[in-house]
Every structure is written in C-alpha cells, then in structure tokens.
Length: 320
Image (tube, rainbow, N blue to C red; front, side):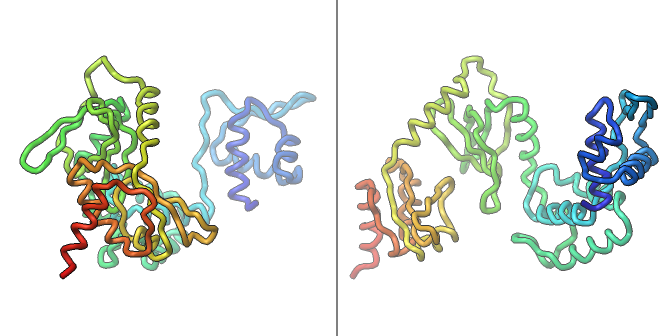
C-alpha cells in the first residue's frame, strides 16, 4: 500500500474510534512502530486534533466534534474520478449545472503534475455519445429536459406521483407509483405502475409537462403493487429463440423493457419471453416491425394469432 493511500486509510480508521494505540495501528496495517509514529504525526500536522495520553493505559484520543482533514487522493484515484466524470458528457444528466463547480473543486485538490495528466486524458479519451468536435468538459450544451430535476426532487419526497404528459394535441394526467427512472437510447424514461389501470406503463420525460405528489390517501401498498406486477409478469404470450444474427440485430435495437436470456455459454443463442398486448394497435404494429427487423434467424416458439396475421399481412405486401 502506497503512503498516501495508507495515511488516508489510517485517518478513516482512527476517526471511527474513541481511542487507539500505536500498537493497534501497527497490527492493523502491518507496519513498523517507526512508520506508525511518522504516519500519526503527519496526520496530526494535516489538522486532525489528536490528544496523546501517557501511561500504561495510554494512547491517542480524537477530540470530540472533530472531522477528518482534507483527504489526499492517489494518482489512480484522481484518474478514476476524472474518467468517470468525463464519461458523463453528452448524457443529459440531471444536476449538470454543477459540473463546473465540481471540476473546479477537483482541480483545486490536486497537484500541477496531476492536472497535466488530466488535460492529456481529456484530449485523448472519447466515450460513446461524446461529440469529438465539442469535447469541452464544462460545456453545458447537453442539458437534459428541464422537468427531469423537478421529477427527481419530487420522487425523493414520494414515489406516488401525479404526472401530466403531452400526447399529440392534448395533455393527459396519470396517477402512478414510480418503479424506475432510467436512461435508454438517449432518452430519460419513467417506468411506473398506473394506479388506475393497474398495469405497468412507460412515459418519456421529454413529454412530461408537470409532476406533483399524488394527493389521494387511498393508495395501494408497495407490497400490493409488486404482487400485481408479479402476476402480470407471469402472463407470457410471445416466446422467441434467437440465433447469432438475430442477437446482433437485437443489440442494435429492441423495444423498451425487452430483454433476452442467453442459452449457450458463448452467447450465440438466446430466448426472449414477454407479454404483448395484441389489442393495442400501436404495440401490435411495433412488435410486427421489430420481428421483421430481427430477420430470419429466429424461431417463433409461441406467438399470438394476431401477431402471426399481422406478419402475414406485412409479408403479402412484398409478394406479387
């Protein structure tokens, strides 16, 4: 363990104890007495208020109401933080306006040599979705939909929400229990349990125009909601086996919330099981298009009759 890393770890170790001795530090970190004494003296010089007590039962005490002094980062820790920070560019993340102050504070904690390394990393590393013509870490052109932060602040108070969604020429309100808020294919999406229809629904944050906590006191418990979702998940009417070419197509594009399970150790075959609401014309049309997109490297093991008819109608368009 390098010295900087060891001292940071020792600081956390002693800050969580009412009392410690040099012997305990020696044993915990497998270091010599002289090294332990030097490390403790250096920690004192950094600002940690330690009180030494001599005698048979002596040792060191951390003064009450004390806090850890400024933590020093190792070179690898700095690179790990900065690379994780770089990977957030062009991701439309919430609280993005804090990026500049975060970067300034991070740079203020490190040496000039470490800053030079980060400048080189910033010039060389590009992540998926990053615009190579606009690699400025502090650029705020990738701000997310303005309702995203309000949504997060509201759901931290209560996951029972009343959301208003813009749909074509009208606005509709939904009372939901928020299950997940996630980012997929460049979009922020709300996965929620519709408390009126009692089914799972997906909403785009881009279409969100208002969100408040759901005022009704007559709420289903979280346990009841999960029970209802579990029963719905058991209803499967579409089962597909995918070969390697179909798996490659699946990775390029797949409808929201669909996932595959690999059935071979080398991930060359897979199976997909899901429920399709065939009475929903939009969903039926989308799944028909997607099955055709997967290509011929699939086997339909179980499929609703309406999907088969839709596939046949689509294929007839290309037949003379």
